[in-house]
Length: 344
Ligand code: AKB
Image 1 (cartoon, protein in one colour):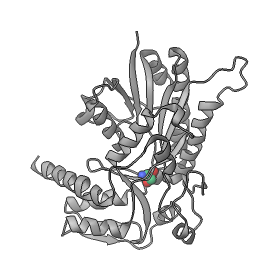
Image 2 (image 1 turned 180 degrees about the vertical axis):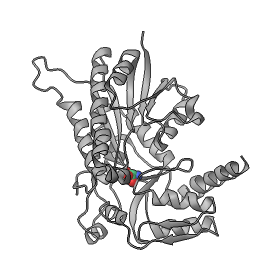
Image 3 (image 1 turned 30 degrees about the horizontal axis):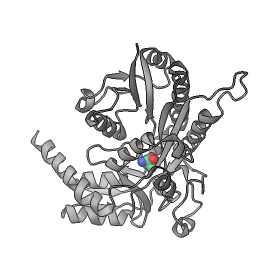
């Protein structure tokens, strides 16, 4: 008998950490198997059934996984983020797109072995949007899932295409085969805004200026923000990001009217974030750089997104607005973390 498990790819990233910790506390959670190209952080290592070091592009490795476990749900988090992807666009395409196809295929095969659908939970991003100019960004209402889908980054293109691949594998995969049958891939996607974690630092993203500013201030380090003070994008703190992934995974299929849902927490300008950081850390040394090339990317991302479909279909509500995010989660957790770190 193969063991029934939840699979998490890219588990060493900041969402993976949060997800593993949450599953470890849920009494009814399945054992978790993770795969990442780096060995799993020892902080969460004891919380999983199996931590595989490997690449999602390695087909023999995925075949082995296929033989050893009955995979019930896949959280496919592995990806190169937007800034990293601009430095290595073809590598990003391989990891972000081919990696996703490999996992979708694994889900398809698994669903046929154990004859019930495999849930495929996929984090997409506001990077799928591509507003043409700042004036349009400033005058646009909160964007729905279907507006301005003309991304300007490799990562945004990859995420948007993978959203379509998920829909394709859910509804149309092998549609011309003689014996037509439901594929069993149950693809569910949340489009995240910039995520901010109090316990881990993101790497390679373009929304990273927000977490970088907060973590730098807590460590007494100077920070040069790479976007203009008036730059606004939506954000969400990690506990809400984890909640969104778990809530969409738990939602009854018949309630879902689409495969891809926007979710958001709060929108803030870089200046407003700096202000909140200075309120918490009076000595915070934050400067704004002159024009940086990454500004052009953030200027194509919306200031606000409309998450009413998620609210309507599966009861999505963030727990944290901006004041609560800073006063109850970010500042106390980060302060505690660096106090502990400095004593070590
Ligand atoms: C990035 O900046 O690449 C990510 C994202 C917005 O998806 N944080």
